[in-house]
Length: 232
Image (cartoon, rainbow, N blue to C red; front, side, top):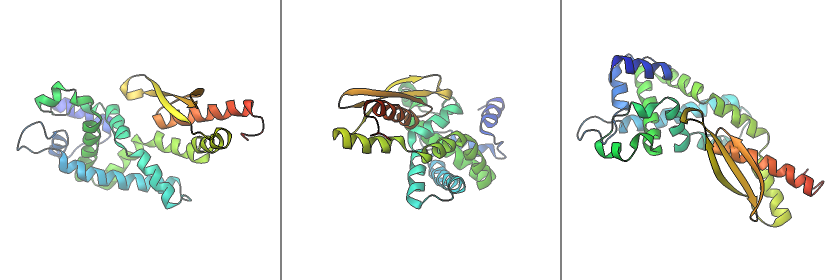
């Protein structure tokens, strides 16, 4: 990795490495070279750092939330799909060092490799600059997600809709991802909701979860028109 390339990634990340070897290791997938250092241990460390940082941020943002609620929010924020998207926002796949097999099979866009690379990167930041440096990066990258969780915590449309459709139809809503829009660093998702095979609403969001919530909100409005008073 050239100095120029490293500077570009550091600028996106918001951290300048004092020891660039930590970054080099974080970018080395195990397929790159047999017997050479790879990012698996940093991934292990980064997973723990991410979990702590997200827990810290959630407790600060939702001081009244119960442990079970915090656990659910954390699980929604640190799954592989979300982490891979964070990696894409950093253009991390471009800098990963992969073996020939992974190169040929599109490893730079694989969710599992990107998510692991993102965790390894956080592990490298932790080793290089400590917990506060890693926490700042997580806080910056997950700011929108935390705001979305705050909005959803006010009213969980999916749960409300499921309770209503079970009463009305003895059926549960089905959500289908029908479209992904925009470039990797700025995607939006479109989800369609059906009840008993009949479409009841579509929703758009920055994540699949938010798109489903938006679809549920639309379906609640449709049911309120069909069944006045029932969906209040």
